[in-house]
Length: 208
Image (tube, rainbow, N blue to C red):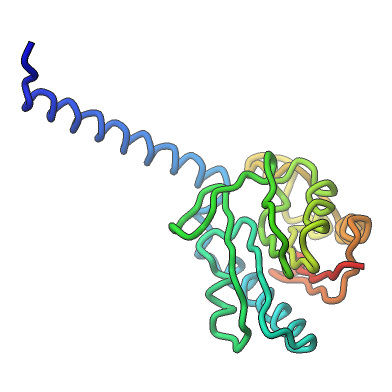
């Protein structure tokens, strides 16, 4: 039976429209789940800026010719954009559950891990969504000389259990508990700072 090219093309076009609608729906669902609608908010920019300053100060004192930064949950690459304005020479590798640019690798940290060495690993605005934070930090320690991380701590009392559940956060640690987890993973905290009206702990730690 001869193929009707117009019918075949029309069916293809309909299928592509359905696929694109499904892809847009899926992206919206994931974006809502991980609060990406807030990624342009001031606290997100402040967090990336302050993390870039910590990294800059650390490498300014150690003076490497170049370092490799792995950015886990890099989102729209705020950290990279901040570091680009510095005079540091670095190689950048970004990972995210929902990549927002072609040079970012897809990665679900609750299921998998990156498999190469890094000088510095950044994990900003991510640990709240991790099922097993101690295990993840130990894995990072095996592959990275230093880590810069952020965490919205329970000490602030800003988020109820219901609010955390609504945002799909999987844990609720205090400042001391996060510090202890970082130390137990094999790192020593060298810099730390509270952000966003003492809601968020930002720290940089180096391997023991």
